[in-house]
Length: 324
Ligand code: ADP
Ligand code: MG
View 1 (cartoon, rainbow, N blue to C red):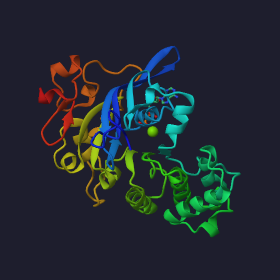
View 2 (cartoon, rainbow, N blue to C red; view 1 turned 90 degrees about the vertical axis):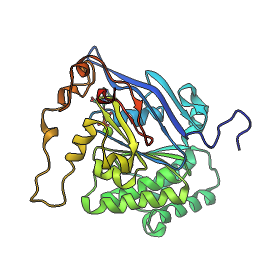
View 3 (cartoon, rainbow, N blue to C red; view 1 turned 90 degrees about the horizontal axis):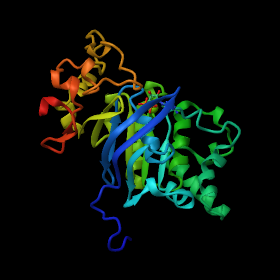
């Protein structure tokens, strides 16, 4: 499709370079995302994990230009989103979609399911009503709902899991290429999380999607991700292929997150290292490596110098002075 000089299929679909997002909070600057670079290949699922407040949602929203970044670039399929405005951004948006944490709150309570799922088609200018109805039916069936049963009903008539299916249908109806899933199962009952994760896997295959999958829980990203990026206080600590990250975490923070995963045997207590203090405030992050105040392996240099991200073997990268 692309001519010479256009996007190449071997380039990542999404590339984030030196992205910084700041918020003004009571006369101070809160740096929610600081100099983050990462790439997501076509058809890949990149998991993004870290404790609550580390900047995951801010990063996801900045990719979609819902929060304009303070600095850095976001490139999607060869186009720099950070430079797009108005109509050009609107046209691009249909290729990138977001699925939120709270499915019930993200559905308009007064609109029927059919209208909710058709809305992106109307906004993007699909004028033929029969065509819209066909696409709504197709996508509702794809997410495991019976179109005739659900189209005329309102969101409150559905469970959290069913509402998330509806949100997924709404996100997919325009057949996007990249979907950012922001904690899509965190608000759901444990018993239905696996169903929604399986559905996302099926949808990924069926629609050829690329996913940025955000979660605070490493166990959840393990199930779906090809690679995992670990974030702490607005910075990336480690990016590794999933299997290697779980077999041998490179960053001490990744190791602590792994230890904190509850064990299947309830009589064995999980390690509690992470309970050692809350993360510091992003309004005044520690100097040097931001993780040094909680790191069991902190050295003098860690208190002074912020470690840059550096490549390791096996497609891994880590920001840690242990690898200097
Ligand atoms: P996560 O999704 O990892 O929980 P967020 O991206 O929501 O983290 O938040 C990162 C940091 O930015 C937090 O300290 C949060 O309080 C702050 N923050 C998020 N949104 C805003 C906002 N609109 N205004 C000010 N601060 C914000
Ligand atoms: Mg969040």
